[in-house]
Image 1 (cartoon, rainbow, N blue to C red):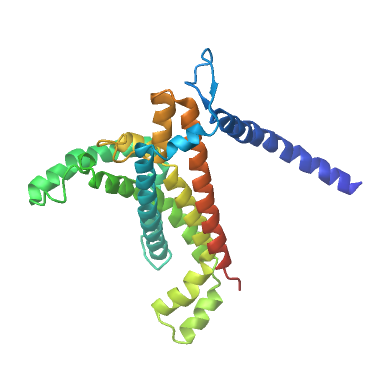
Image 2: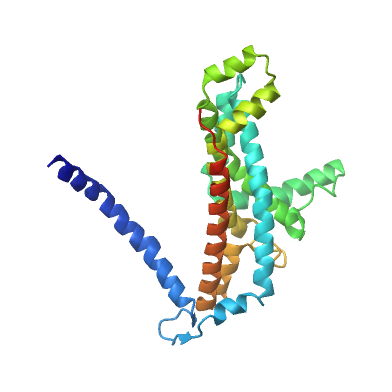
Length: 291
C-alpha cells in the first residue's frame, strides 16, 4: 500500500515536468529533424519540397558556414580556458583569508546577473569610446583602439566579454568545490610540511575534479551556443568575421528564409555540441577521486 502511495506521489510530481519537457524540447526537436529534409522558406502557404539529404550535403560546400564553424571552435577553446582560469583564480582568492572576500565575490559574480544583450551594448561603448580615449591619452594606440572594427581583435573582444560574464558564475562552482574539501586533509598536509603549491597540485586540484567536470561542461555548452553577446557586441561583424554558429543558423532561417537548410545546420550543430560535451564529461568523470 505504501509503495503505491509513493509511486502516486512520484507520478504527481514528475508527470508535469515530463509533459513540459516533451512539449518544449522533444517534439520541436523531432519536427526540426523533419523540416531539415525539405526545401522550404518557413511560410505555411508555400509548398515544402522534399530534398532528402541535400541540405546536409550542401553544408560541406558552404564556406560561410565552415568559417563560422572554425570561428566558433576557436572562440570556444579560448573562452573555456579563460573563463575557467579566471573563475578558479578568483575562487582561490575569495576562499583565502582575504578581508574583502565577500565584496570581491559579489563584484565578480555581478556581471552574470546582467543579461548578455545589455552586457554587449555596455562593452560596445567601452571598446568604442573608452579604449579609443585611453589609446589617445597614453599613446598605446596599437593596443587601445576599437577592437570591434578589427577582424582579428573582434573575436578576442567577444572572448573578453564572455569571460567577464561567465567567470563569476564558474567561480561559485569552484568555491563550492573548495569548501567540500575536508579540513583535516589540508591540516594533515600542512603538518607534513607540504607547501602551498604542493597542496594545490596534489590535494585541491584532484578533489576539485567534480567542479571541473561541471564548470567545463557549462562553459563548453555556453560558448558553443553564444548568441546574445554576439548579437549586441559585434553583430557578427566586421565582414562576418565573428558570426558564430547560433547567429549563422538564425540568419539562415530568419534572414534568408531558408528554413529547411537552417534546420539542417541546427541538427549538425546539436550533434557537434552533444558529442564534444559528452566526451568532456566522460573524460573528466573518469579522473574524479573520492576520499
